[in-house]
Picture 1 (cartoon, rainbow, N blue to C red):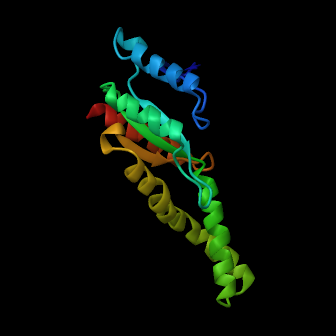
Picture 2: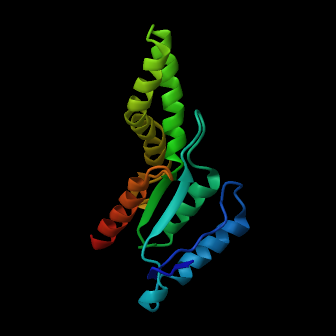
Picture 3: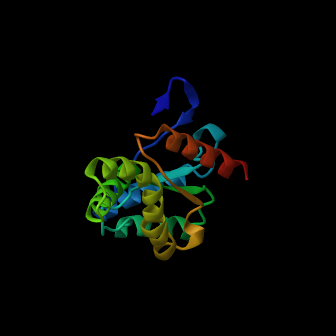
Length: 173
């Protein structure tokens, strides 16, 4: 995909690896390998590896994710890999509901509980993100298989800007 307003930015999307399809895995590995060298315009400069933030109790990484990231590391990949946890808004929504119920159970008026839960849900979601997503990343993948990580939400444009800033700073270092 080439964006008309940013002609130098090219995004490539692959099929998901959740089902562990060896065909999809090989296609991604071959693509990355073919873009490691050559003219700058055709090379990969960064990989945004998107993983859906897990639902309550779910796993962040499937076997196919782990296999691909470990194989990129073993192949000597020098392209920075940024793990992007998507759908952070779902984590916020779950935390908002949990907090709302908690506040009501503690005796708070329902209207106040709704308002307070909405106010507190972002910081609670960040804690959950670190306990689940980041902890899973650090325990399931060697630290040299990825360069950085972030969480994004389509409801929070600043999270997308953060990803762009993280990518820019990663490429500058």
